[in-house]
Length: 102
Image (cartoon, rainbow, N blue to C red):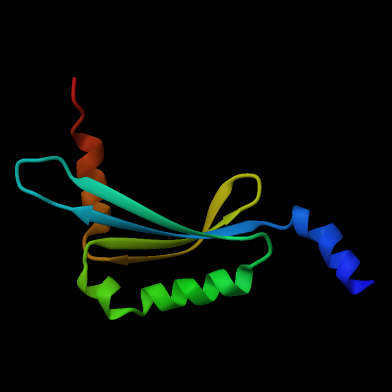
């Protein structure tokens, strides 16, 4: 009975994903942004949270600045639950918005 109930509820639970965005700055060129996503199945909140903490606490992530790591919950629209930034991420986001090609 419990198995049937879990299968009936699963389609209505949210999906989770961990998004890691790295910014590459080369003088004279626009800021390059690379995203990598790791998606989890519906209702896998615990596994997604564990993976997020593993990525944030990793030494490679901290030395590869500037990096932005987000834990996102996707139900109807994506919503960021937790976010960690290493390096001047906000400054680089503002640089990218200011310069647009005509």
